[in-house]
Image 1 (cartoon, rainbow, N blue to C red):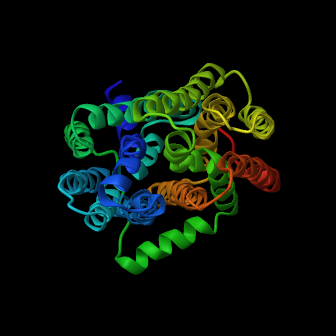
Image 2 (cartoon, rainbow, N blue to C red):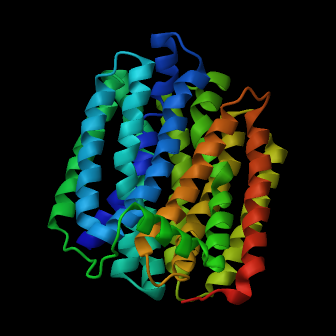
Length: 384
C-alpha cells in the first residue's frame, strides 16, 4: 500500500502542477495586462520542457538508480515552486515554470518505471488502474483548491501548496528501497545508444506513439478549459473548478471500471471497447455543440472516462514489449504522452471560433490513429 500511494503521488505531479494553476490564468491576464495566449505559455512551455526532461530522467535512472534521480527532481521542483510563487512578471513565472517542469518530469517518468520494477502482468495493470483512480483526484480537486486560493488568498499560494505536496513525495522516496540492482554503463553516447535500441523495438514504438495520440482531446480540454468555461461561458473561478472536477471524475470512473474488469476480460477487447466509446463521445460533442457549460461537460466527461479506462491497459501493454532499459522506455512513453499534451494545448489556445468543435475533431483523430497503430502491430506484440 505505501508503494501504491507513492506511485500515485509521483504520477500525479503533472496534473498537480497544471490543473491547480488553471483558474489563475484569467487572473494573470488582468493583473499583468496580457493576452490569454501569452498567459497560457506558462502551461504550454511547462509541458514542452516537461516532455524533454522525461527523456533525460529515464536513462539517468537506469544508470544511477531510481532514488537519486527522484530526489534530485523533487528538490528542483520545490525550489522552482518557490520561484513561481515569488514571480513579479509573466516572464519570470514562465522561467520558473520551466524549471518546475524539469523537476516534475522525474516523478512522472519514474512512476511508470517503478510500476514495471515492482509489479508484473495483470497485477501491474490493476496497480496502474488503481493509480489512475487515485491520481484522478488530483485534477478533480486541484482546480477547486486553486479557485479557493484565488478567492481567499492569492494565486501565489497555489505554488506554496505544491511545495507541501512535493515534500510529502520526497519523504516517501527517501524511505523507498532502491529497486534497480543492475545498472547501465557509459556516458552521453551510451545513453543515446539505449534510446536507439529501445526505438528499434517496432511494437513498442508504434504502440507508444499511437496511444499517446489517444489523449489529444483530453489534454486540449485541460489547456483550453479555463478559456471556454470562464472567458467564453462566463463561469466564476469557483464554478469552473466544479465543472472541471466533473471531468476528472470521468477519468477516475474510467480507471475504477478498469480495476473491476482487469483479469476478467482480455486487454485487447477492453481497448476496442474504449475506441468505440471515445468515438461515440466525439459524435456527442458534435451533436450537443458545447455552447453551454453542461453541453460541454457531458461529452468531455465521456471522453475523459475513455482515456481513464484505456491508460492502465495501454501503458502496461506497451511496457510488456521491453525487457531491458525500462527507464529509457518509460521516459519515451511518458515523453510522447506529454508532447501530445503540449501540442494539443497549443492548438486549443489558438483563436478558434468555437473550441468545442476543435475538441470533437481531435477526438476523431485520437480514436482512429491509435486503433490503426494497434491493428498494424498486433501480431508482433507480447501480451501479459
